[in-house]
Amino acid sequence: MSKKLLLPFIFLLTIIISACGGNAANSELPSPTASPIASEPAAAEPAGNTGMITYQSELGPVEVPANPQRIVALTNGPNVLSLDGTLVGVDEWTNKNPLFTEKLSGVTVVSEDNLEKIIDLEPDLIIAGTHNKNIDKLTEIAPTVVYTWGKLDYLAQQLEIGKLLNKEQEAQAWIDDFTQRAEAVGQEIKAKIGESATVSVIETDSKNFYVFGNNWARGTELLYQAMGLNMPEKVKTDALGPGYYTISTEVLSEYAGDYVVLSRSSQGDNSFMQTDTWAKIPAVQNKQVIEIDTEAASYSDPTTLEYLLNIFKEGFLQ
Image (cartoon, rainbow, N blue to C red; front, top):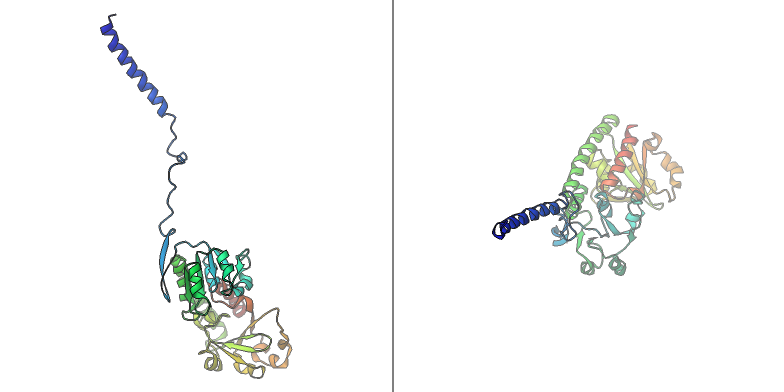
């Protein structure tokens, strides 16, 4: 074979061999389901879970994390916990609440008087009350949102915490569901005890007695607002406006309704329950006293309200 004929043949053979080698190399590449190459960027988190959002607070707009991971709650800790917010610091009263013992394991007790401890926690969000001291200094540590206690009703307050934590839909869903369930239970209770029956919420701290209006925790929002139960006229006159009213043992029976919800501490002096004054109250004589734990009932967040709803269902209906 001449060299002129041989060269084209060799050239064609080289092309065929190269093509076969390329196919073999391609067959060793990872499939689309294999792990990506390390240099590829990770997938971005869903929108709304990263970066900052603007929260419209009482004191004006505040830039806060869209997904806070290190929250210090000087107030409203139970509201945050009810939405599974991540706390690293909490006030002492929330810390004492037995309903939150498990969720607060490892969470530091803080106050506005010890800023160094708050700084050490490296919070990305601080929640405080307008009554707290050092608000200006707190804002230098992390984005700080403050609330005025009692300015919002218990449902609106939970919704605001939902907005703050970027969980508004979750908060609203609970509000809608709880409102319906509580109203239904209230109707059951009134059907059993009578439409005109009255309920008093009374608390003792071993020294004084207090009677409550319709927005001072201890289940008052649930009983009077959500369930629509009645309070005695004397309670309405003296406690509805200010929220609570201090009374003496001598006039205790004047403020007791047909039913009494008694808020007391298991650790306190409850010897009054052995006195004739207490024993002569009609609700006591008729065994129409429902006891609640003061430490577990001093908030109006979803966790506390669900806990009290079950107690009231059992106490009134069984």
